[in-house]
Image 1: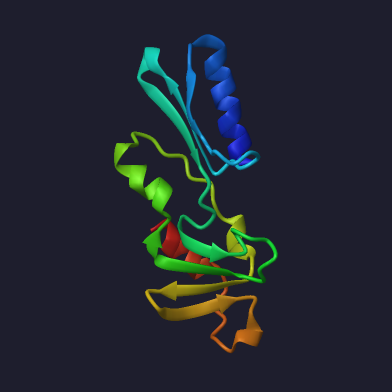
Image 2: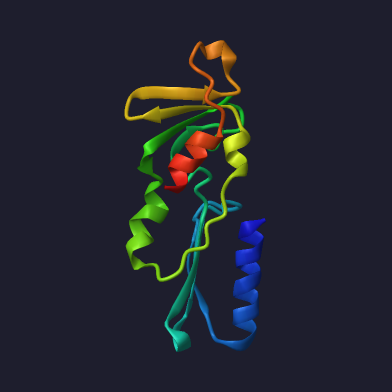
Length: 134
């Protein structure tokens, strides 16, 4: 939903001000990173898809995999690499934390969510969510 809202914002701005698409994912149908520029106002609007804000692999990249591996000690590279250039950031995250996941700090497993079969401590999703936001 947040991506749709960002694209609606671009449509609203584009109806009044000239703009151009600076970048879109090269793979057709992929919408993980887009950027539009509005040069008359020196503004860019970017949409980053980083479901956990932290570095993650697994189900978030390939739906056939059973769970996510989320590294809470490392931010997702694309958006965090640009964070220093942002004046305003709107963060919309949360629902991915409800998915089965293993949470890491470095190589240490902190715990899991919805994965009792992995024999790690179930820590739910609130603590990892809070850590990712911090």
